[in-house]
Length: 101
Image 1 (cartoon, rainbow, N blue to C red):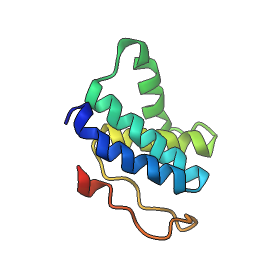
Image 2: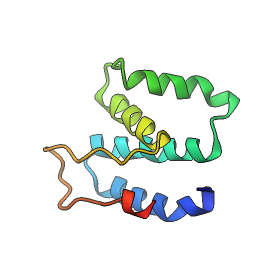
Image 3: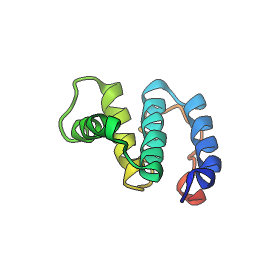
Image 4: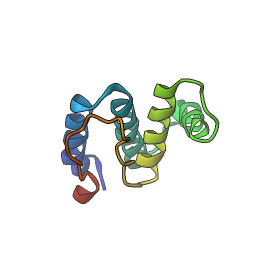
């Protein structure tokens, strides 16, 4: 998948971010960035950020928003389907992002 093939997926993710509660939106911001990093590669100046975010998926940062972003980043980078919405999510219906990939 290249950058142009990602555009429809990124558009859907941006819509999900706009309609999600804040914690869920952070997850999808990270998910989008993770896909971007997978497609374009991790540049030398972003290597430290990459490993820090991956570490936060195992060792909590202490901030639920950073941890949510980090989980999203990892899932996007590894090509995984997004996490299911939490019980507290205000999303009225599931969004099938993986079906576009």
